Length: 336
Image 1: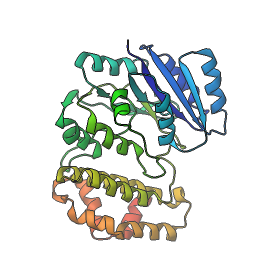
Image 2: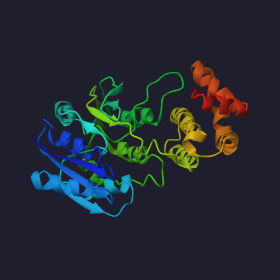
Image 3: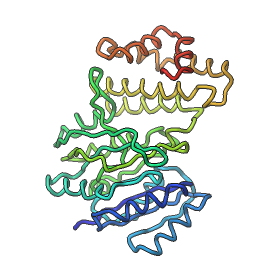
Image 4: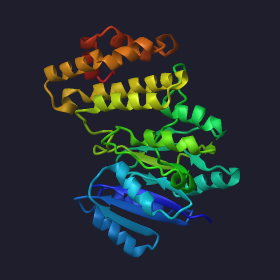
């Protein structure tokens, strides 16, 4: 039975941490090492890690200065002993068969990587949404040209994206070590996961998607994706430009552009006065800046609007014709 390393970056999550850790220690696949990386927490999270490590020899703890999620994962990778590795965020939890489902696919189909879906849960654990994928194996050039392309976003005429997050994915440590793969910081890129994926899947030879939804992604007010970032729009543009450089064929670019508009919606929603704390005038000016930006103008002009569904088409038309006041109104009504 191969050893699986499970890396959990930990930062100020005392409310959810024990639930996360206990869900991993209760896995039906028992040959795991649990690496808890305390990224400079200033609540009780670090102490919780140490206390659990004293009780279970499978648990290893790293304490380090705060440097962000990506670098915390790198610290875990440096000491990982497993043949395979998976990641879990410390405010999330795993069903007891998460690792066994991933490992079954690796062994039964002789793949080097396995990807599952997820459930989105509320703070108290209620399931609010389930993303389940159809089973499929990608081999050789299909891995990067088709599978990785789906991680960039959906095609213009259908919903076929695969979430690019690194959780509920079983990775080969041989591939990681051989190619010296490391995460960038989310302080540099708003999604360090897709940058990691853009490198890892260059080297993967056989990848299976399974219909597991054993990962539970918890939406909390403190989640990185829920926090207001004053520079979110600028970081979204930077990520888009970096990914265009990486995947510069036309099919990938269209997927990137569709995901760009998804990210723009998030940027606009966070400019609401109730979230950003700005005055209504400041919020409008910020939204106007987004709408008039050269990156938005360029992508709106290029994107195949005729191929998309009505709601998306309306949003793009509003952007195309710079209808700032209508966008502000719909944004305040929660309709963007």
